[in-house]
Image (cartoon, rainbow, N blue to C red):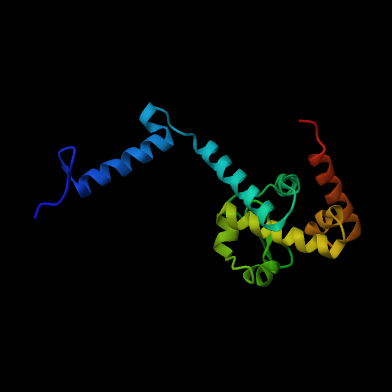
Amino acid sequence: MSGPVFHGMRAPKFLSLMATMTVLINTGHAQGKTLSPHRSMAARRQSAIAAAASQTHLPTDALRAILEIEGGRLGSRSANTNGTYDLGPAQVNTINLPYLAQHHLTVYDIQNTWRGNLLAEALLLRRAIRQGGCLWNGLGLYHSATKPLMIAYATKAWAIIHRPL
């Protein structure tokens, strides 16, 4: 038995061709366009910010402010003087790994994926807001429990959030 034939091709070959064409069309290659890796990275970042904000009921601007202040990169692992490490774009401190593991986040996800890093950031900010009583205290506590450092961090975040576009 030969199986179904579509446009002169057997089903597996036809389906493979259709899948390839779908990928090419959806990525812009069929029109001779290529996507910049920076644009796709920005799109993944924006999508992860929106998802983390939605899941934790936090403002996206607060998550963006932390990212700007922290200035980390996907895959980064920065040593701290106390023996811990800061991971990924939001510089999530490894001291928080037991808490984040309760939310099914792995070190790999936190360090290497936008989704994992931004969800970790949002969960830690949500916890800090509960501890501090408001968004601004929570933003400060995301960085430090030391009052002057808290205030300085929250002030930076406020300036970023309220910066004219």
